[in-house]
Length: 288
Image 1 (tube, rainbow, N blue to C red):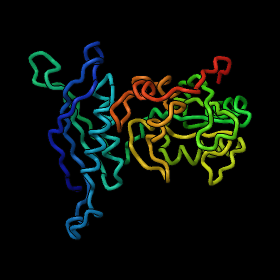
Image 2 (image 1 turned 120 degrees about the vertical axis):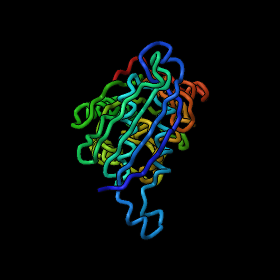
Image 3 (image 1 turned 90 degrees about the vertical axis):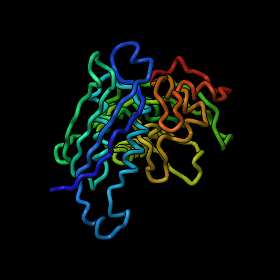
Image 4 (image 1 turned 90 degrees about the horizontal axis):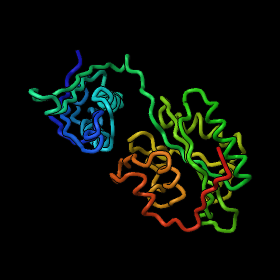
């Protein structure tokens, strides 16, 4: 029988509900988590490497909840559950999410769910992917988006307008065309990158060099993966360039203006408005 790790009475504030007030004003949510895991190795060794890192799990839950907007408590509970089971040592978990004072005459209303690793099916995640090219850019951007639409395991749900932008760093090259694509996928970020995005880049003739600002046929990068904060090889997600360059932030804001950046707490629209817009031109005649 697995042991229990208890995270009790985590009080957070977020947007959850279906009426207008709930969509505009944060409410309290009370979260209780029970993690089921074998703690014998940690008990014997007294080493953190042998233990479930409940501190990391809690931080990830806090970050996700405070940056989220859900209609249903059930969905919020499911997202908390997925973070709990992201630790391979956790065999199962029980999650209770309550909204204090949400129902007249009741102290709180909520849901409690229990899932094991074996029965969990990864819920589709909304992922924002940036797309850029300055070698035959119209044809390559269209081909890149078309290939994304053809991929099994993901669905393209929205494509941003296209912007012409001057090159960064290496300025003696053609302007870039930049856009962003929103997809829904159950693929984990590593598999999405190496199994989908990189093969599309290779199929369209992308040649990688030591100069990250060199001309390219196509560039496909994960900018935001749900509300997760992670490192994927040498890349950090959320993409740090969101906060630095309007040619990254502007197309993303067009797709999801109210999306809250999980590290800054700002919406994408707020981030885009703060960045210099010089040289960025909307290309109304280019449709992807």
